[in-house]
Image (tube, rainbow, N blue to C red; front, side):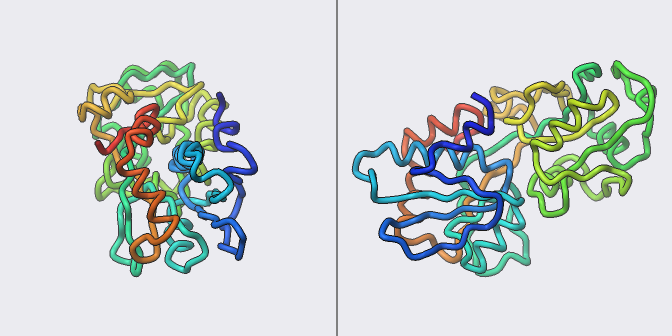
Length: 271
């Protein structure tokens, strides 16, 4: 099943929108979410799974928007949504919110299918994404020649924040990189350009080449075992401690075996 279909899991259950979803008065409680494009596929599956409980039939709805982790955190802090989905860690500037960890996720380095780079070291990644190395001829194992076209995420992205922390350290990404607003757009850009390289959540690697990192493949099994080094956390962010229907949902996500099974299909469960 493709990603677009997985996100749209039924108008009566989870509505997927393109912008922040304010909570509104309703006869049926509505849990609203916005934020990370990495967390969105998982959040949609979890909402659908939660609503399979017959006790909840007709008694709860979900509305899911995206926009990036910073948008989700800001929406949660302002009370515009019940949950802000975030694929980045808390920052000192995040005040009045609680980061409720729900899962872990691998960030994969991706290249075009015609450029089957098998592995990249941390030093190579820093050199490539900082712009120090600009041609594929200077990258061992590259299957193409010519300029390296960098594709990255926008500043509001949790994936961008995590990539910088895990892979780049104190080195900045080149300002010549093409910034995209979602994982899907990075995936599409790399699919279309034989000279492109980018990074995405592990759930967005279909149709591209996923390079290993420091000799370890970017796979779910390696992320679960702890062998793969490019792993970050997923959070559901709330304004203060979660309450009511939101608290019950997040508790189910964090603790229920059914939720951990859903998470384990493409992501790393906490338990």
